[in-house]
Image 1 (tube, rainbow, N blue to C red):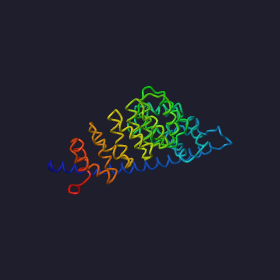
Image 2 (image 1 turned 135 degrees about the vertical axis):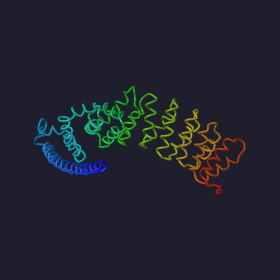
Image 3 (image 1 turned 30 degrees about the vertical axis):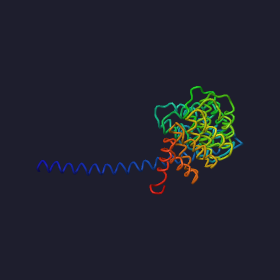
Image 4 (image 1 turned 90 degrees about the vertical axis):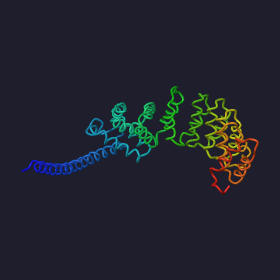
Length: 354
């Protein structure tokens, strides 16, 4: 037999054997996977039974698997506890928390320091859901971790965190001298409107400028509408950064109340152009025709961003706002105001319709 034919023959044999081996591997792997899943289902069912038995008020201190068979399946035990956390309420949730503390907490806290991201990820959700107030610093550190772990942490925080943990977050925030603002922003945002009273309390305290500005931003981001009087009270704060955040937050609240509009009008005349620019932008969202003169005056500012925000704010006031823009675009006293008005008009009105 010629050498080329031998090579072809052996290559075909190799390919056939490789294909058969691959099929056998896939078939074997599927069988092993199904058996493993069936075994895990049985173990999980045993764990569920023991967890439910531990809810029995006649035996409130008995946890059947504290040092028994189920401690060898930490992943399944955590899965069961988390599933029942979403189902049970009140004192029974406290019982689940006790079970976690007695069986898994020490191990999962150690896993949070693992170099393996997957291990930290699995531990993060359970630690956050069953957190105690003293665990808040760990939660803050989790929000400084990689994106996947931050996402898992924030997801866990939405599962009705206990008030004691929320209180601990605000206590830590107030005392923290080296703030990771993004971590606190994500953390507090996940709590939603449940933090309203806590934010109000902190806004009334003598905090550093950085923290006041942060609280104003979180108020507008959630938003916490009932806190607008506190924002108005702080609208004269000495630090410009706070006034910028106040102007933005008042706009984000989307409450066109006379007192909010008046506060924004005052901020539109602020000594810092950055505050003016944000106030003009927020006034546009109020859609109040009473602010047309203020917004038109903003087009004559010496600062480009103030002119830009004033122009686009006028477009939100309907026909009257557009007419004022056209008037400014045709005047000759301030060519910068005219140019900005014309630019805004050309950006929102197709050619031939102006």
